[in-house]
Length: 215
View 1 (tube, rainbow, N blue to C red):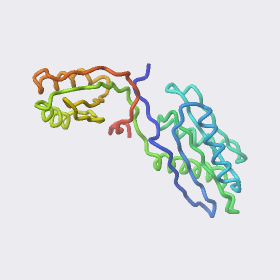
View 2: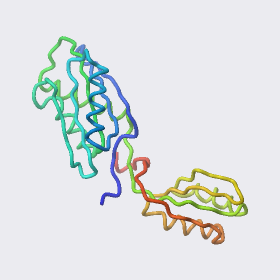
View 3: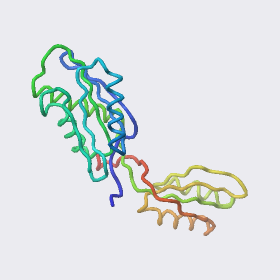
View 4: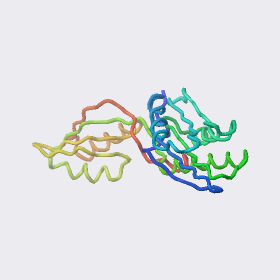
């Protein structure tokens, strides 16, 4: 099973103008083909007066579903360049649509490939690439006397701490990459004199910043 994948953080869009034609690139996360198709339909409705709505999407952590369309542009000049960018960046669970408003000047095959490639890159940059990693979550609790050790300790660790509640003791949710959670819990136990209790929750994919080697 894959323990990480790259996708976009949220919907985003950007625009470029080439030889009077407007190319508006949109990107959105999608976990199913139905979500991708719904995104495409929404943009067709939004830009009903545009000449072309070219797209590419990859769904599945193992790139099980890959679809693209030139939508009236010469074959191989629009959808395939979009798909090539997605594959080159190793992006999955993502749909990119590049809307073109024709400016009256023919760009030629090479010009179209460059334009749709740039439109896809612009969309991905606007949406923000993120690495989704398998993450372990724990519901934790410590006495107030050990809370400072936890607060300061996690600042030095690759973790997230949220949902803090102050009751009879301090409870919170701890999130860490699955591969590092045992080390994190052991460190916090040592810092708190073994006064930390942790109840494992269900693992899930969460977004973490892309590492330098992924860029």
